[in-house]
Image 1 (spheres, rainbow, N blue to C red):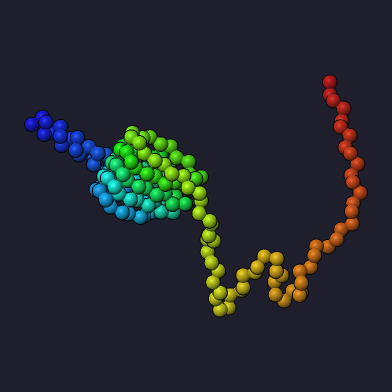
Image 2 (tube, rainbow, N blue to C red; image 1 turned 90 degrees about the horizontal axis):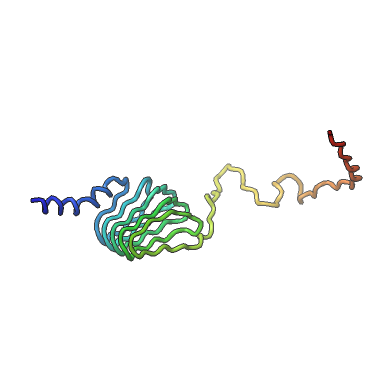
Length: 166
């Protein structure tokens, strides 16, 4: 009876610990892509998780072998924990994380993706046009006027330092 209780405890402990994480993924060979807020726990083997832009993850904890986690540009991860081997985590180069690992795992640093504009202006009827840089607004003369020329000024006289106090 003691062996059965000990066996159930050993089998259920990783699941119980990972069940505390708000984003728990249990099982093998699954693929997920999502925005995560809070700790992320992965228990299993050969699974793939993409942590999407805008995520705020204090800790990613991986218990298993052969899992792959990709953290997109714009996602925040503070700490990585590995309990297994053959796991791969791909991070943006500028993201600094702390790490703990038991086993041989790989962290890949990748260059940041080219930036894209936050929004694309859309022409709407009756809306004012979006001005281009360096082009004068319409109706205010044909060409951009250069800044007025100012005459060179005479340099100011040097300031004499005051005497030191005793």
